[in-house]
Each structure stands twice: as C-alpha cells, then as structure tokens.
Length: 307
Image (tube, rainbow, N blue to C red; front, side, top):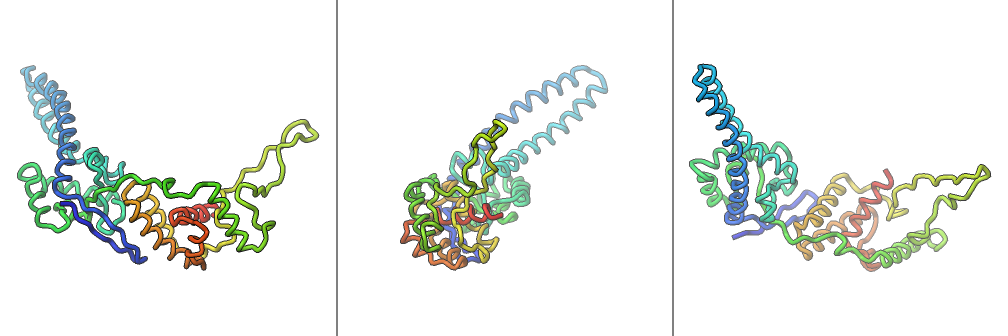
C-alpha cells in the first residue's frame, strides 16, 4: 500500500508526499514496456529486412554486412531501452508515459526535482534491476526497502511519489475586485493617505499619452514596467532560498502534487516566515483577506518587478 513520507527543509518547512507502492509502479512500468515493445518490433522489422537481404546475397561482403547489422541492432536496442526512460524523465520532469498515466513522478530524496545526473544513474542501474527478467532484482529490493526503492533509486538518491488531485492557483486566489480593494486598503494604511496610495487599476504613472501632436501623429506610450503588487514593502531580507522555496511550493500546487488542505497549511507556514523577513505580520494580511498562496505569488511578482 502507498505510504506517506515527510521531508523537512533547512527552512523548517515540511513537504508531505504519498509514496508510490509496488503495485502502482508495476502498472506504470508495464505500460512503458508495452510502448517499448511496439517500438522494438518496428525496429526489428526494419533491421531484419536489411539483415536477410545481405545474408541471402551469398557474398562474403553480404555476410559481413549481416553481422555488422546484428551488432548495430544490439546497440540500438540498448539505446531505445535506456534512452526512452532518460528522455521522458528529463523532458517531463520525472515522468514517463506510464508514470504520467498513473500520476506518479520521480523526485530526489530531499524533495527536489530530478536532474540529468540522477536520471541517467537510475536508468543505467535499471539494467541490473531488470535481471533475471522483468525487474526480478528490482522487485526484491523494493519489497525490502521501506521506501519501495529499487537499486537504481538507491544509487541515484531518488524516490517515486504519487501526485495529488489537480489544484490550480486560481482556485484559491481571491476575486480580482476584492483583491484590488484589499491592496488599496493595506497600501493606504502604510502610506497614510489615499492620494499617496491609489487603488490598483487607477494608478497611472505616465499621465496621458496617445494624443495627436503638432506633426499629426500619435506619440506611442512608453513600455510599461512590470506591476509591483507590494509597493513600499522591503524585500531586502528575503533570501534566494526563500524565493526558491516559494517557487517550488507554487509549482507543486500548480502540478497538483498537494491536496487543498496540505497546500493551505504549507503555504501559510511559509507565508508567515517570509512575511517576518519582510518586517510584516502575516496575521494582519490575513485579516485583510489575503490568501497565503496569493501572498507568496505577490512576493515573486514584486521581486521580478524590481529587478
């Protein structure tokens, strides 16, 4: 059965994952290998048509060509078997077609996404796991290991987890008019007057453009800067690790790896810590109606707007 695993980061934020069990991994692997079988049948048909054509020619050069083609066939078979998993896990961020169908994903043991090194190592060792036939050694290892890892996972420092139901950031984001009102109210409390803190949407830093000039043509407006959702609030003490962790949480929510209650709990704890670095009390922000995920996204948007 699938089990839970909790990974704590140096920032004292806990990530909760649902481990993929042997059954779900077996079904995903079976689908992947069915795809591989179809691909290999097509390769075999093409190779053997060339091979038999060379052997039936009856010449010495034809026999040499046939043996050379057999050597190429062995090499191609290895490249397809190994390259299939490497390519998809790199392009799809730890997923193959079988894993995607079963909502599984390969990640590092510390909860980070897999990189090229881990992907290549775990799939090179896959050859050993496959022995003596269809993951014989790998299945034994997965039964013994508490995290259901095969030898390739142990060598690469990876685990396979189950993704949660799809949850999008807009599902927890407050409505735009309400958020604009909250933004204006909170900014007014910072600057002391409504004239200094204009509501979002009415702020026009460039005045009026686009009027006909004496030359009979319109003056094009200047390029608008990125919108800063947190004006006047310092981000000086927010570290690069904080930004990395915020992005990871937002990405995990958008990929559906967190259930709604876990996403709210994790984002709220992270929002409290980041707000404290900014010299803010997130309880006051929540009193204004700010959702933790909206706050974290606003921190990222503010950083990018000020760069």
